[in-house]
Image (cartoon, rainbow, N blue to C red; front, side, top):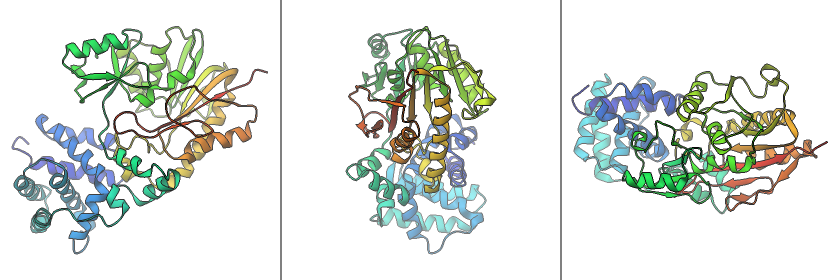
Length: 433
């Protein structure tokens, strides 16, 4: 594979085909990276992420340039041309290199009969420039249902949300408060030549001016800091943690919030972290090990209480539910291809079921923080409103914070191109008998 870029483009096309068929980038990209030389891995990742980010715009252009769709068995060449269009429209890559190497990649994919098509389409695209988008799906490069739903839910903000989703998210760290103050760690970053600044809302968060490999971060391997978005870090400020409490992190993988809880209060009696996924649970343990923290890990469906609960109630529960992930599209642009409008109602059912189950194991006087990385009210404040109709004794706590929008039943953060992801939090308290 050593000779230049030809295999890399064909590998990128195979990754995009896998995403179209329902795999996430986090599933199909790691094995693909091992199929190219080490020097090409960063570029392969950038190609796959960038093409997903602008997929709806690029696909609209490509469909307009094709007289008829490619046959199913040739679909990978459609994706090869999308990768090339991404480079023509959004990268600094020299045009001749994009054209020549895309034709070579077409041969490498064993589709020599389509090299003329690839060459002709890309030459026309280069000569004629990008066409005007035909609709909002192309203009904002999101599926039309998502554009429509955001416009309906956020009539004043929908365009800003869509534009924020198309930016690249900043790299944000959570300083391990058991080891360093934020100011001390900022000083260490400065000494290492890494430009960074404190965030506005999360007390232990630092945003880097530019992303860097984690092995460049001071003492990272020894647990000094973790990579975590500012919005995700806010959970610990809402839990009102205190020594001696028993805390549950339901739906815990990959463990960022479990570790944040343990760092925020060093004398908790126990932190139990549950996740349904046998594949993802080891990531929680890896994060705990690197940070020298201890939690009780269980593989289970949190809602199926009988399968895992020992009968001892929890003082604090963080319920970060499975959701549409529409607040983190800038970090996971493949969500635009993977998510369907028909997913939202079943997700809301899962969210409600989890909330009811967790409420039943919360101690009287205890606090539950409901969290999503969604911007759809159907998964957020409407769930809380429905739950409070069922549980009229549940107390809704309005946190005194400077972030997010007050929805009347929790606070909504919308994605900010210069700082945090989109997130929702609601804080519920169980009355004492």
